[in-house]
Image (cartoon, rainbow, N blue to C red; front, side, top):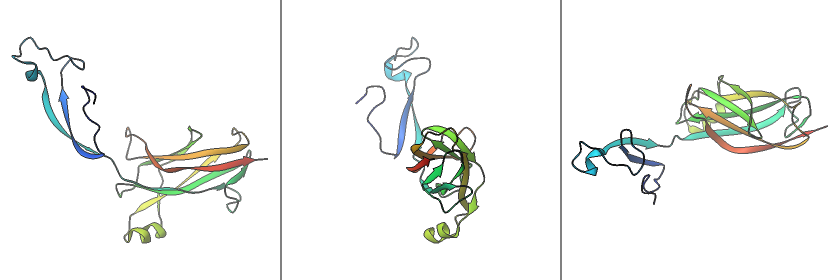
Amino acid sequence: MNRCLGPRLPAMTTLAVFIVSGMGCGQHENPGATSPAATRTPTSVPFRAARVDGGIDVISSVKDTANTGTIKKGEMARAEGWALIDGKTPALAVLKIDGTRSGETSSFQSRADVNSFFGRDVGSCAWRIDFQTADLMRGSHQAQVLVSQGAGQPGLVLGRATTFRVSD
């Protein structure tokens, strides 16, 4: 257990934060305080991991959508899937290829199959992101999508990475 950070916490819990104004970890001296405990103020902060549902359904060539999994070098490609953050439409979906930002969208549409799965209308959740393959080497690549709830919010990983190939 780290003296300053405390034990590791489960994803759904309440985190007690000790605010020490102007001092580093382990520094509890305050000339006006009568005891070290008087320099710490416990504050309860809700700590909850967001639930992220969805994933990448398919990666294909834009001009030949039946061609999935392998795209010719230089062709425009398309990643398609769906996403929900805590049951709501994300504000942004960002596509990363091999860890490099390759495209994004803030446009989401409804999908009947997702509504059917959840047994209710979940609203707009389907996304589509086109990306260029000209700068990708021939061979296997990893695609990953991150979604966020709004500007300045952290990107949340959407499902597992998906592998596709670039060929001649």
